[in-house]
Length: 150
Image (cartoon, rainbow, N blue to C red):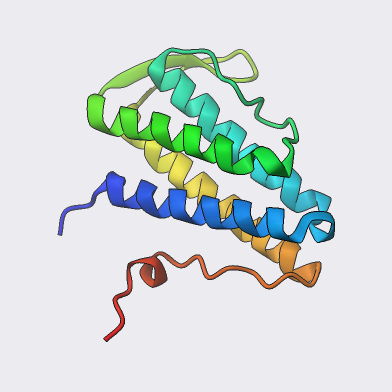
């Protein structure tokens, strides 16, 4: 089997939409930590997509977004990521300036792999915060996403 970032980002998109819906459904019971982390997850993906596409980011990386906008922001991020996956080469290098003003160069494949891991990391933190607030966490295992019942 060949590793496929399209599959990975289809999974990430589905999980992010499920989290967005769970946060909306639980409204005032959602802890601030979960809202802040999900906003950051969306903002970070937006910034990386923007660096690759050479466009201005639209979601500040640590600005808390309204829960009601999470689905829309995720859909835009996913659209932009799909554009990258279908139009750019993974070994293509891009130069960018990070949030501290330092210049770097990385290949697009490494950036996309980083963004995927970053999303998993923060979704796990969000799940923990939700569980501590009495909200049942989602099943987000990749294998559960890909599993076919017999």
